[in-house]
Length: 221
Ligand SMILES: [Zn+2]
Image (tube, rainbow, N blue to C red; front, side, top):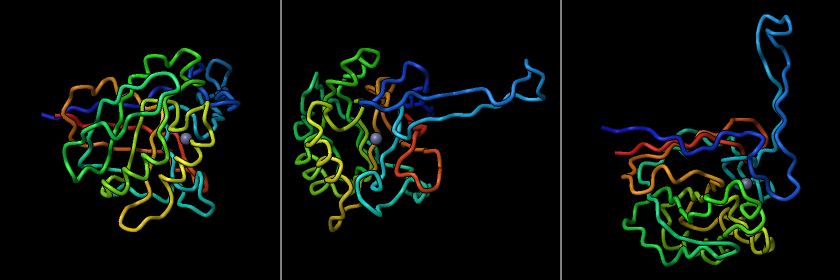
C-alpha cells in the first residue's frame, strides 16, 4: 500500500532566508474576532521562500515561468533519492552518488545539511552544486527533469558567482534534455530509506513569476 509524505516545510517566521530577502508577512485582512463574518489574510512572500521550485525564467530572460508548467511536467514517476553528505560550504559530491537506474525523472539529493535549518549557517554556509556537475548530470542522465536538494539553494552563499553559473547550467537549452526544475529547501529526512514511487510538485500558480513556493508530495511504497 502507498502512503503520502509531505516534503515541504511550513512557511513561518523561522523560515530561513537567502541574503537580504525580506521575511514573509502574513496579516489579517478580516477577522471574526473583530466583527467580520470571516477570517481572511493578506500574504506577502518573496517567491523564493521556503520549499520552492525554480523554473528557467529565474535566470534566463524570456525563460519558461512556473505557471507555464502543467501537471504532466510536475508529476514524476521515476524519482530517486541519493544520500550525498555535504557540510558547510562544501561542493555536493554529485558524481560520487550512484543513481541506480537510467530512466530517472526526478533526483532528490540529501546532503543532511537540513539539520542546521534553524541555525545561521544554513543560510550563510550552505553546501552547493558546481555548474560542471549540473552539466554532467544533464548530459549523462537526460531523462532527469527535476533536481531537489535539502539546502537553502543550489548556490553556495559564499560562492555566488558559481551559483549563478550552476542555475544557468540547469536552465539553458541543451539538445536532448529538458531544462531542470530545481526544488530548494526541501525536507528529505522523512523519506530517507523509503522506496519512492512518485513525486508531485505543486507550485502556487501565479502568472508571470519565475518560480514559486510549492507543496511537494512523495508517494512511497
Ligand atoms: Zn530559488
